[in-house]
Image 1: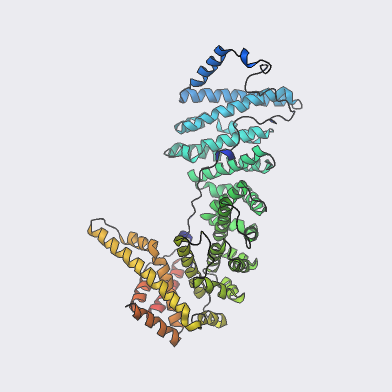
Image 2 (image 1 turned 90 degrees about the horizontal axis):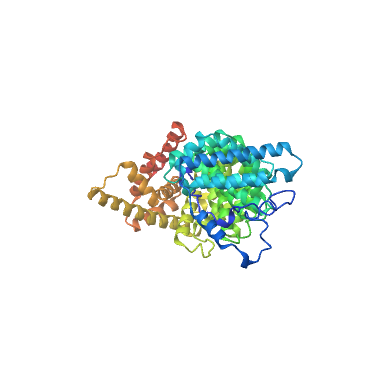
Length: 551
């Protein structure tokens, strides 16, 4: 009974400075090995002793460094003019001496330094519209295809700086102008093409891969449509799938899993596209690496959570649920649950997504003996660890397993599988019904408490409309309470006298009646939306009305 809106993804995080490329050329900046062109701007002085240093010269250098030029339109034009000049000189030198690196290496260093200077523009995002109007964006982006990958790496770092989350805060309009200009000038295609030629055996290029992904994330933050554009226009999805498939863990694999989750979370088009690329099977392969082992660090643990986020997003379209079942995803999730490692709760969540409104997944779950594993979790027999002892974790897991149970009842409506499901609530003197009613009482009390609090707020002249009140109650457990009521409805409609008697007895013990359950179902009935169309809404309301009438 999982809904798309019930899962959020908040991927933004501060990035480690150590993961970014250095701000100066690396020792192997040139292919010809001539490093004399970059020695910090001082040449021929290495033979002088420290006693011969000209102190007046050092003082002059210090003064020049402290004189920071104001960042305004005039400064911007100077920076752009200087960059365009060095850009042109480098093109001419490479065209004139294509086979003589020593003849164009000087211009390459100068070009590198100009790109470094442009990074100061991140300190004045209000100037971004002027930068776009000066028509400099095409020249900057053109360098992503430069033969010297170090120049391309410089551009990636510049783009990351200009689009950084902290830089663009409170500068929405300049940010949109910049990102629109970047997209119009094929930044997505150029970034991904450059990404494919970067090597992870080189430390600087490995850092540039991370920075490239950060830039794409930054642009999605400013312009959400970029999430679908980058998948339409480039082979980024294919590259990300290849990255998460690698067995060795590193920061780039973690970030690739995060970007993939961001691309999938709000885009049905991307979910379907990845499914067509055998993405369901490949994500399952990545998850399978952790079926019998735990992540070794918090970063690796975050990556595993990202992978399950990807899997759950993929399971939204119906055709991908079928691919999941065919790839034996149900069996894999049950194995993960049985192994009782850190991915335990994530496997339950994935199963819930797979079984929601898809009976074949529910049937497969019963056929491969998943009921025993699921009911063990339902009864609170969950693996314990440091993280699992947290109340929030146990509560989330509780809600997940209730949702999974509701999905099973919704997907298996008749036959021997239905009988096997119902029989679980009779065995061991109806202990599963006892547990179900224990959860019902707890969530009912919580929702009632929040309802009273809202009534008090309204007495204090804090007004709320019906929708706001309903949403607040959902946040305090109403949705889980509704799912429990639906399961009670299924049990009641089975007409099993033993189960009915047990439910009535437990309600009576807590001074409740069937009317309380009917009220919860009625509120759910009245708030069913038409996201899946008016016909599906009518069918869903009809099912709930059947429970209300039976009770």
